[in-house]
Image 1 (cartoon, rainbow, N blue to C red):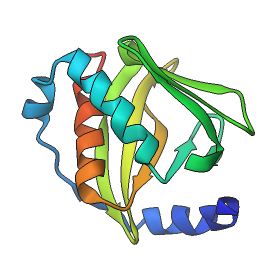
Image 2 (image 1 turned 60 degrees about the vertical axis):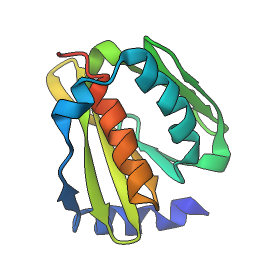
Image 3 (image 1 turned 60 degrees about the horizontal axis):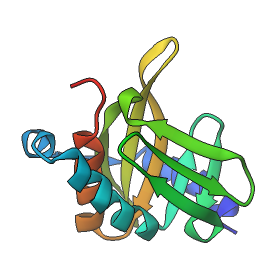
Length: 142
């Protein structure tokens, strides 16, 4: 069902309003605390999309989350497992789009030092802000 709404989300995200993050505070979050909090917050995201390969996933389609000191991994019922190594993570951004708060997560990949890889969507700004700060704290380029 969510696949029908994906074109709408893409159009609406073009009208996104960036919300500033406190990057200095994010840098002071210990890795163990950030990993623990992401374990709590990520399962509350309503929707997840991956840019490479392009796939959109409802929370109900995610089989499980694995968040460790080394990486974030999750699998859906429709695609293979997705993985983001913290060593490749290049931070996050928070935006307000109509009806949602979007957290964009970037990673270093071959040929692109900061490529948009994942988008996580929440209805609640506080949860989205916290997730963005946690992703920012786990950057691999600091």
